[in-house]
Length: 358
Image (cartoon, rainbow, N blue to C red; front, side, top):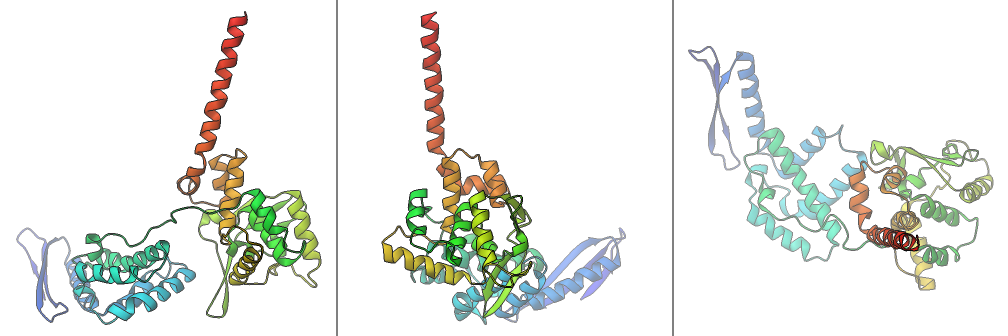
């Protein structure tokens, strides 16, 4: 490695690093205004040469360390699970700079053949690609093989599943009124809260005087450990109005919880238990099959059916921006557009009748 001063007063730096095969590669860069900058580039090149020669398993830890202030802990757990189950068994010991698109396409084909849902396949692809994107942007990996590949799976389900109000009433009628699951399902259907947000609610979050619900955290359980963290996005922190009957149900339920403190969770259970309860009731009474998260979609569908506009749904659901709302629920609005057109047509016809009678 060397740094030389050119006739024009700038500096040129040269380094030699080894690739994953052991071959020496010569790197050179001109035009540094300061010798200090040339030395910093030299240091980075030497560091990157070593980092990109590390295995995928080791670089994955570097990636997580670099992103520790950006990625939420729950996402870290999900990434670790994906790599442990679906990526490390094939590529753990491969150097980062040795990957080629054809072999990754073969890996895609194998994973796709295992019968996972398209949305889960998309998650696997997304987490794997993120590591290579980071290697290219931060450590100057020469080529991102994922840019030559089609995305695996789909980001969204093919069809949104939800309950109408009648379907929901048929379900809730099978649960004892006032019981824990009854009140929880009522809250999920009538607020559109995410299950993690609902399970994180404390007594202090329920404003029984002004009929409001404060959503500012989320709960999940991972590896037998409980976590309460900030919600999905900053926009997910919100206060929403809730109907009087729901406030009454919540108050009566909380009054039965002996010794409940202001910062105690009012639903001290895990998401898997809620899903299991829902599944048992659905199967026993032969009801339409949906997931717990689909109660959120059911609330959105109910609001849309009653003429609520997308911007209000965005605020109530804590979406990052209106595009999320429209991308998720926009397909439910065409019927409303038809109703609007019919209303305008009726108004026009009524106007013409009035003109003729004058």
